[in-house]
Image (cartoon, rainbow, N blue to C red; front, side, top):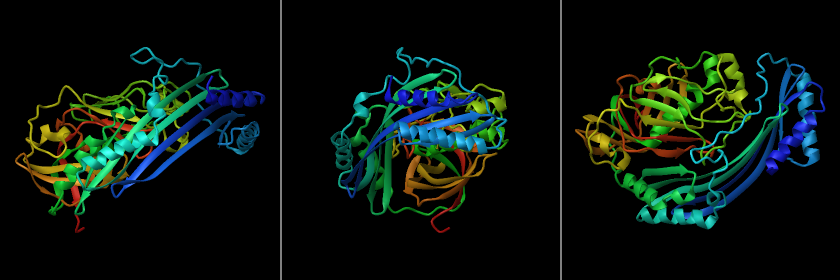
Length: 462
């Protein structure tokens, strides 16, 4: 039994002394280490480790939650007492969906129970091992100013409830995110995965530097609709917004989601899945529900949503393993979305481009934009997934299949679902890459995508 599972079972045992109480306990230990660099040199090594115990209690028809990072017997007892006191004052909870029954965790393709096959070398990576990736990034940039980070994260979690369900699992992640700069032009490269051995700092540094060198003397383009090739980092933002407010079961049950299960809302070539956790993610959610593969869009047809127990009960579906400690407020959120070209993908031709993954797409572009990255994106309307945001880290004008000029950063206002809608996807790049979220715990796997139309609403002048 892990230390985390021991904590969870001790809290459940304490709650069982209360007649009629239902309890679930989620314990998460996180150890994250970060090596930051700026001005082409490492300037900070930081590491943090914490254990959080979270109790959700249903007592006399009322639900309350409490948490603590004080894992001594007195600390756990105080958390239980606070949570019980809160339950006495809380309004009745008619939406309580009950506890997860005892359920075994699924096994991965290698037969190992999910959550047990994490990479130990990544979990125990030293500052020196992260520094090697930073050194390689800086050297590959060939003298350009560089900045960014390399991080490793280890998570060990356990769940137990008063229905007799108890599970535990572990996960590790390695990620690197860096930029290179030349005369005010920035280029970016980032990656994430379950093994630090797979993080190639030199390849990332070379890619970021190539983007920066190609970004000089940008021109300004007027607002309007442009054909676009989005590189994987930009596509990851599309997936992130779909995960947070698109396929979110809470948003759906509140009738604020775009999703219409069974309807063709995307191009025939679009298939979006929530991937099994593997080495990167934990094998169960904050309610102890096992996680597995989930198809959200198949050949352009919306098929599924992410649910915790509460939203699943409201929607008449089974929970999908996406409960989080903040799910009551934010809803159940997918953590590893993957966009994969479906059988309807059109053929593409090769052409020159800064990022090789997008190279096959440019030959088909008559006049459009190659976009590296989005940032500061905000949802305007969840019903049609209208998003506003900015480009960054490289935009280029493409004419007759050739990159002809760098372009200044642009503001856009675009429905993400319409951009991926029927007839709007013109092609996909070669392969996919895993893009990390800013904080460890969510990842997005995507190819470059060629889209028919993207709505640019502003430029550097306004």
